[in-house]
Image (cartoon, rainbow, N blue to C red; front, side, top):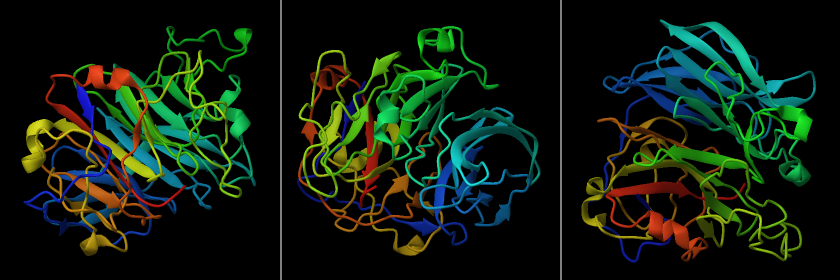
Length: 376
């Protein structure tokens, strides 16, 4: 199973990864996925999508995109490729308000064709906060994260899409075995898989168990890694380690309660994680066998103002000025992107909250990695 590698490394690891810039400079690249082994689709938060060739560095703009609400944290966000289909997660412009939406299309040349909107969140708002918006295919389903849109009460409202993890069929319909597939008859939105999430911006599928793992931004000490549970309530804001930005007071006096799902991991202070991947333990060089160490990515000096960089899978450096990156694993070549709100530095060890994470991690040669810096 996966061992979580998220506290501070005790020392820099030798054999630092090298960085090669392989694409053009981009303004706020946000999400990416592979097409084959040597091409990636990269979203640009302002409303673009590019195909980048990792072999020669060439890039092409993709046409046929939806109109996006490109304000604050909103815009063109994640992309994932599944067979012939490309899925986009973005903040849709709804005439002065916005909501997280998902489109499905096919890629022909440099154009998206047969594009259709298969989901739009039921919490349109004027806020530019907390769209979440990560996509992941697992077990034949499309999982998607939606943030609470800056209204924390949404996360505890089972009729609201905001503050949740969704599970959809590939065409956007509701799976018959969703925990509340009957929908509003029991007060739950039928697309919901789990609730009680603040702003989940990283998801990955465990390669051995098929479980979805997700991490999310919490305020001032409440960043979490969760294994979303079918029908589960992950607590925000009723249960949280976070503190209010303005006052520093605890959001909740409870960091665990019966009936709520505990996180696998909590960062204190926050690191603003962005991107998450599982990878074979043998890929970490001198990091092999180390547990509970933050996976560091060296400062992306070659792509510091936006771009796609190729980084071998390895631990490296102390990441005092590490940049947050979207991580995709599983291909001979891999590209990571700098996050638009990079910054921050090394942190003290995070608190482990869930003993089950250690049991799940026993005796398997797979690790899960995330990087981060700054605050959201």
